[in-house]
Length: 429
Image 1: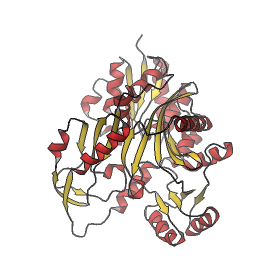
Image 2: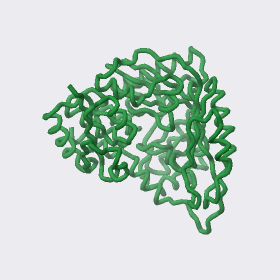
Image 3: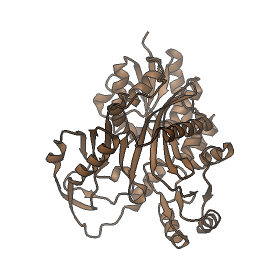
Image 4: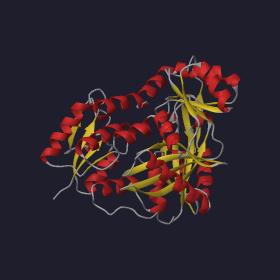
């Protein structure tokens, strides 16, 4: 009998993976999402196009009616914008996967900090702020530097490091300019940053990929490499901390992506997500370990393969590096053919066409493009990726009277911040 899956906010690759598993597919989109999907990607599939952020009940009832006719084996998403809707559906249909309380904790970073503090899991001092005085009070209590960032959101947008009291006013003004009348304050965590992608089944968490991370101004991510350069003891401590964190937020099934700092006091969780990592981490994980996180996660969810019980050995190293470019009108991109044709390059992508006005980099999609390479180790791949990325030169010219598009980023923050949707989610339960 053909198994049925409900895909929330799916992009073409996950639909193709579902087809390869010969699943009967139902896609759930918002109207805005559906307009961006290529027609051929959903040809022949059942698509529900609903304003489920505004009216979750209509989405739940529509999918429940389809489930009554022919039950779904799973509700599945790999997109941040789909995790809340998927959780509502898992709850309504009685399916495995992340449920509303878990997604509320992962989506609202303040709720997450409160929960981990209560359970003593990777506790980080934090508070909610609304005023400049709140920043000053938190800084006096915790010390500097400290972090101010959105309560919800993703893609490295709106994160600020406050080095000392003299910077508090500037940062508060920047938060207000972006429409953040409520923000999260956290102690600054010293140490290198990593990310951990895991697959959980029935409460058993198996770490698949640990990635080293390169960050730039504004905590923007400019590179990742897998496997991270870690000794066995630290890897075991990381896996233990991730498992405790996922247990604390109640995640028992599905993919997860946990961002961490390796502090002098041990690994500390920065934030977590019940989805696979972005920034080509899925591609690199498949290159290094032979595990397609999206494909394996979907196959396990619908019962088409056995759960992953052990992390495989790394076959090689892989890294992604993102191109850097000065803001302004793009006149030319130099070095493309030389770099694209390098034998170690697996993927190569330039984000902007000549003539486009490149914005200041305020969130991940503002980056100018990327390349993915392989090498013997993650460290070697990272060095090569950065070296090759530096050979790609973006020639720009200043644009007269060009200003940073604050209104665009304010709208993006509103769109990415799902903390308000969490309240709707809880109200609908």
